Amino acid sequence: MIRIAAVGDLHAGPDSVGTIRPRFEGVTDRADLLLLAGDLTRRGTAEEGRIVAAELQGLDLPVIAVLGNHDHHSGEEATIRRSLEDAGVQVLEREGVVLEFDGATLGIAGTKGFGGGFAGASASAFGEREMKAFIGHTEELAAGLEAALAGLRADIRIALTHYAPVDATLAGERLEIFPFLGSYLLAEAIDRAGADLAIHGHAHRGTEKGVTAGGVTVRNVAETVIGHAYKVYRVGDRSADDVVGEATGRSSTSTTPSRP
Amino acid sequence: MSGVSGQQSEYLVAHIQDALATDARTGELELDVRIAGGRVFLAGAVATTERRDAVERVVREVCPDYEVVNQLSVTERQQPGPSEPVS
Image (spheres, each protein chain N blue to C red):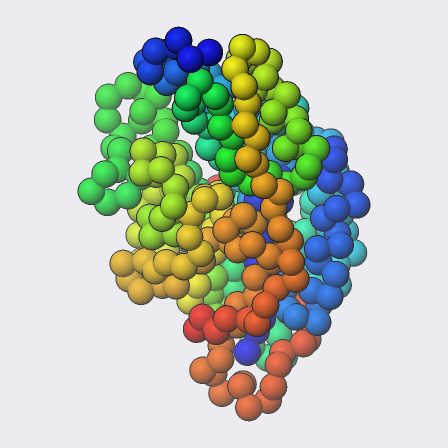
């Protein structure tokens, strides 16, 4: 059994100094790793990136993140990524990482993802170049997620995105903005490559629980949705390792970038 | 400002939401803004009390003639409950 702590949409700003770290007090007793589902910052500035990185630095468990749309707002996403990585946070964008927990391997593939809507009410890459660019971005990231997931050599595989792969976890949001909250292309990629769990954020007024058409469990961990500092999900409960007890060992074994 | 037509109110809601998204003091995209009875109602959750106040300030600047009803909540961050088995 591996315990996964997850939360999205921390939205760190200048007023967040000293406020994020306390919410992770005791996380190492409850979880074996921490996933951050994007929007670590509020306006995507380098300063906000440094603030959230400092809050996360030194947590005694692996921390894996994807960036979100807020992290791109100021065009400083590369600097934010560097700050996070300098603080020990692994940032995934069409990349995967495999961790080992007492002999069981857990692979995580991540991307920001993007919008476009869901089957039956989705946009296509048709018409103006701006529309093609919009959907093309989603297609590119979904394909990268699929490749990264498929490339994971692990007992358990997790898809980590900011945008939602299914509309079930958007329940509570206004229907009109669904196309800006996620895309079925992400779910299709997840189903094709296979995964045990999909984690996303972004939909602040959505719902926690959903499932892809292919039966992959989806969880929306936007902070305002889960109502807690983070949620903890257990994977591998049905594995033979169960009889051994809770996994506590951790070591990053490999990273599998898939993007060009 | 009870004399504003429904159509103008609709535009104003959009302008307020644009301001909340793009103003450097807020950067909030997920808040509920409604105009009813000549008043602006703000609902949803923000991370801190400072942000709740900043949202109200920005809205008052966009529509100084309106009464603003600030119903924003600050996100709770309780420690997590029991873990959920998912696979």
